[in-house]
Length: 209
Image (cartoon, rainbow, N blue to C red; front, side, top):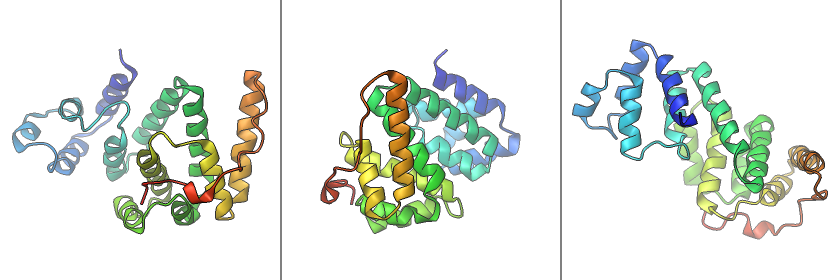
């Protein structure tokens, strides 16, 4: 079975009746009342979201938002595991980017807004991230990186993240990314990628504002 469908089955099986009721309430603006009434399980609801292209293996932000609203850390961990597995099957450049983003999520913390501004994410989007995930610092950082990645599309080199980190004096996090890149290069037998900081800060993220 498709790994994403396996994830959805697993999440659905872990939902209580009250969880399902809350999910249906949260989806009232994107799913019709009739379809919500017909949904008798999480899987029924997810099927509607898949059909409406609100949800897919590449678009998991809504699922993450819903699980955050439920405060179901156990189900969020399953989503994290899926996303890491999906990144593991991606192209090397995408795997490197996902690894760098995980390091940022684990280490940037309350400094994420400084990083956002160096990635040229607008103040409006920063405020929207705070409103979307109030009191959840880890998800604010993840959402920042999703917003940045979606804004710049093809121009998402790891060097841009490293340059932005150094631009806002988060050098320890930048060093961790570079060390991880070198370790990955040694494991794959490729040439050491060297410093990732030769980067024009002025071109951090065209279009992210």
